[in-house]
Image 1 (spheres, rainbow, N blue to C red):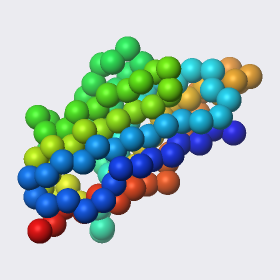
Image 2 (image 1 turned 45 degrees about the horizontal axis):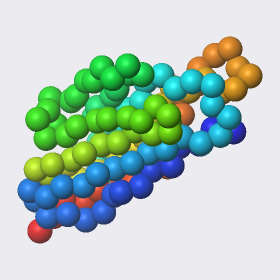
Image 3 (image 1 turned 30 degrees about the vertical axis):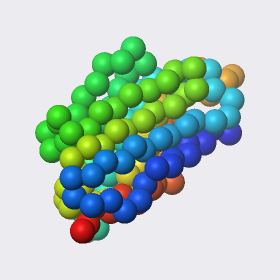
Length: 121
């Protein structure tokens, strides 16, 4: 059974930094795209950043130049370095990954449980 576990959220002042981590565990054959999404109260979940297995990245316009996504393939892990945080970055952040489990011919989409990021003075 594949699971994604996130860590690293918390409360930070505007202008501060946080680093989110997400690790996939279980019987994994391969991991394709990994991504971070976020959902603020009363809003739809939105893509923050994604990274392919070979390191190609995409970012939401609202976080370009402030956030950096990276991954460590050997550990099936993805990270989100968030700098210059703003109050509007406050949301629950979710890890997402396309993973092909061992013994399966297809990849499935998996979500983490979410981690709260609050930017406030």
